[in-house]
Image (cartoon, rainbow, N blue to C red; front, top):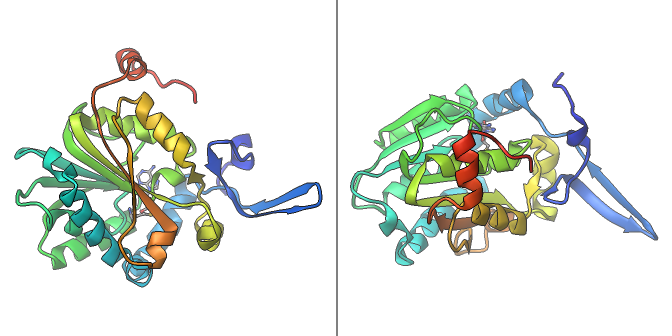
Amino acid sequence: MAERTRQDWEPTKAFGTSAVEFAVGTWRLSIGRVPRHGADLIQVYDSSSSHWQRLQTLTGYTKAYPELFRKLKADGWLSHLGIDSLVLDCGTGTGVMIRPLLSQLSLSPKVHAIDLSTGMLSAAKSELEKGGVDVRLQVADARELPFADGSFGMVMSAHMLEHLPEPGEGLREIARVLRPQGLLLIVTTRHGAPDALLRLVYRYHTLKPDWLKGRLRELGFGRVTNYPLGERPRLARWLSSAYVATLDGPSNNLAVELGKGQINPE
Ligand SMILES: C[S@@+](CC[C@H](N)C(=O)[O-])C[C@H]1O[C@@H](n2cnc3c(N)ncnc32)[C@H](O)[C@@H]1O
């Protein structure tokens, strides 16, 4: 069984862990599950990989992502991608965001996608091959990305930070591999009744929007813009929210951290 740390048991101000929370008189009752880590996490995604893409279709993500990328293009965000830009999808799952992104670009950037689960990566391989898309898929941990500083013109990540014991570590790695003016797209799960069942099964914690925006500002990102997921009222739109920003340059904090090669405690 995965080792449980004290932190696993304690909801923090920044993250929502409980699946159900209610008040009875002066009591607040909260029921949640300990987050999954390590082999336990990989195993659950390996075994979800055969039906993950179907789940994406049923919940409306396969329609919501094309709408999101159309909107991002219309709002000028995708023009941050240069002719030689590389794109990284971090915690790609079945790679559900990759085709909708590429279909909005006149350039064909090289795409790298990483995930901890080999099951998810082989499902991504067959999905992307069906669509004739060439992506470099790699097993890697988002907390220790195997890429040099400033490698990518765009990094996107959907529903992955929720699994990290310290989501700030993942954000710091993403900022490290983005080049200045690079584009960031984060899709996170919205904390609320619609995702309560998913939280019980997949055992993640949700990120609070203010925490996410604050961390991004500290890491040197400019204005963080929040987009709903898709235009129509589908489950995906209730379940998730998108955040877009560009890396304007390292803030003093990040410069200090990168300079020392250290990670600050949260
Ligand atoms: C909820 S799924 C999301 C998949 C895909 N991005 C999507 O939205 O359909 C979370 C994915 O993140 C991966 N993941 C979790 N922790 C990770 C880590 N530390 N490094 C890389 N991938 C991770 C899981 O294996 C899983 O494929």
